Length: 563
Image (cartoon, one colour):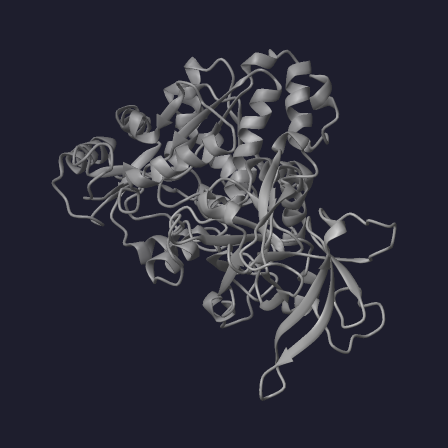
């Protein structure tokens, strides 16, 4: 193990692999896989899984496959295959030439199924879905054998082959493993192996009209690929016995150098976040959100569009660790990891969200002072930019108070402030409308304080941001918040629908003024609007003629006020 890896938390998966290596498994033979179903886009929970899958292989010099478990043609699409590839690569992982599909093995899986029939370990059943559930029984009570359980081997084999030939309609027959109807594990009570499904497959077209069940295809695909550590989430723990049974009872067992072993860890539950792919799919289908890449979605596509960074996500996945206990992880922790990274890499800029016009009385009309501003105080190599200063500027309305409380160090009639990168400024006159609302300030600046430096050593406590009224650009700020108002979306009140907790203020659009250096801002380039929040240009909506910025994350956590 490298020195870097030695400093990482020794969670139980690392311990298992370390023990296997100590018992003789060469480190470079550690072989994992990430097996997504191409029926939707990946979310932050999947990121935790594939960071673990790829991470454990990389740490030991082993390999990780990308395998698409495409056994359900009704819901799988090539566009999701492409999206999954993009997401995994975005987080910095590669699978070299090891991209596989369960559909690569359809012929072999079919042959394994015939082996089970010929060995008397599988049979054709005609029970309906409702009858299947009834016969299987409930935990604590043995199930009841199907009336077709002792169907002659030759008859089951003949029907199975005719199923493949397309002779029967969907639902007419299923192939079931013959295991143990009295097992305390419901998954061992003669599970279905194959069903008829006359649907176009995204890779094999109409070649097949029967498809293997996930439990059957998944473990045998692992075995065919030489996987040593099959890491999955905790809900598959009850499937592990079946995982081993299919491998141990087919001829694949005779070819194995290392028997694949399944290990389960707790899935990610994130506060204020829905982690069910089926329910996220529903939000997309019902146009509740703007597609899978809506910046409010926990999908990696949505997070990328919003401005999350791969490093922040990987740091988060490493920070939360790997356990066997379900728990709720605070969204604030993910956002902390994001801020830690953005603070180092985000270019600074100034934007005014609630403008109050300021006229500089002692500044000549038409004169533009090009001031120098630092792009990132954390990164000297980020360089500097030019910010234009003119006779009229905008400041945030909240940065001025006519009758301030104590310790208000921003602009007041009696207080001098520093304009960021510019000058010291003092208010001379307040202009109000007929209703007494402040509409404008008349101020003066100290020309000797150019660059925000004190010319005579006097102290100025407050520094505020601003933009030129004449030179600034208009833009739209997409102020994203959590999509849901409920902290724990994994457990809902009885009778409640998850959409009952949708946040009506998950997106607020705001017209803002920004400095002109942002005219060419591009998606993928994080920004910090100073004193406000981190933002990024929207990859779908923003252009030089229509600037749209997504709020990535606020400058500090505000979730304590939401509980």
